[in-house]
Amino acid sequence: MLINSITVMKYKRNECVQNLTLGHKMRLIDIYEQLLEILGHQNWWPADTPFEVVVGALLTQQTRWNNVEQAISNLKEQGLLEPETLAFADTDSLEELIKCTGFYRQKARRLKNLAAYYSSYKDTLSDKPVDELRQELLGLEGVGDETADSIILYAINKPKFVIDAYTCRILDCLGLKGNYRVLQQRFESELEHDVDLFKEYHALIVEYGKQYCTRHRCEDCVLLKNGKTII
Ligand code: SF4
Image (cartoon, rainbow, N blue to C red; front, side, top):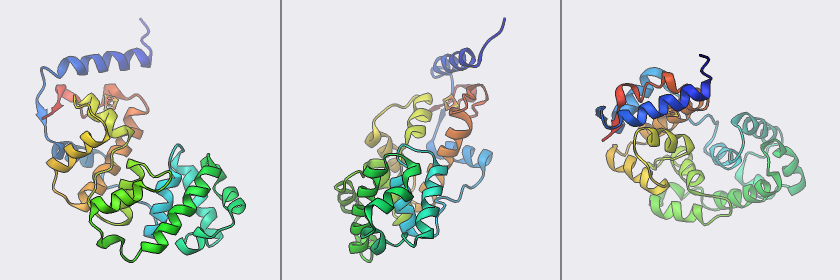
């Protein structure tokens, strides 16, 4: 009988759900170590400056990373990867430079606002308490939880765990469901608040998600082997 990949994946996921009652429980740090062993260090975020991280965090919304790389390269060529310059860039030209990332009109406007905020406060951002900084970022147009936390962690170097769609998917498979805040609190309460650990862990989750979840490699999923769940 010919079994297609979707059938295999459904079977595997059902098997995983059944195993949740049979398998043993893992700590989040165990998952981190397992991901690190399989994938190695990811060394995120790929950027030359903290402001490039800020720009990338906004541009990456609803698009692939290779489009973001193209847009960042365009901005670099035009000398626009400086907050003061970007904040006052010509809007039409900016839209053209970031067109490849989609929603370019909206993103150009939001990018200019974010650049203005960053240029006004860049010398004091790292002095702000994380929660205050997060609230300020969330108050900017187009900055949601994931974008704000990516900026806090990767540009400002403060410990805030980033949750993305892959994190939700993987934790769901491991028996842990919840909204952004619930999942974030789980990581932040269980792990040491170490910036490098948070950076590497999120990067590993994204890489695993790309290599396994997106490609429906559930039958090879090392995280769910032997019916593991999260404590
Ligand atoms: S590969 Fe991803 S989606 Fe598939 S079982 Fe593993 S964690 Fe779940």
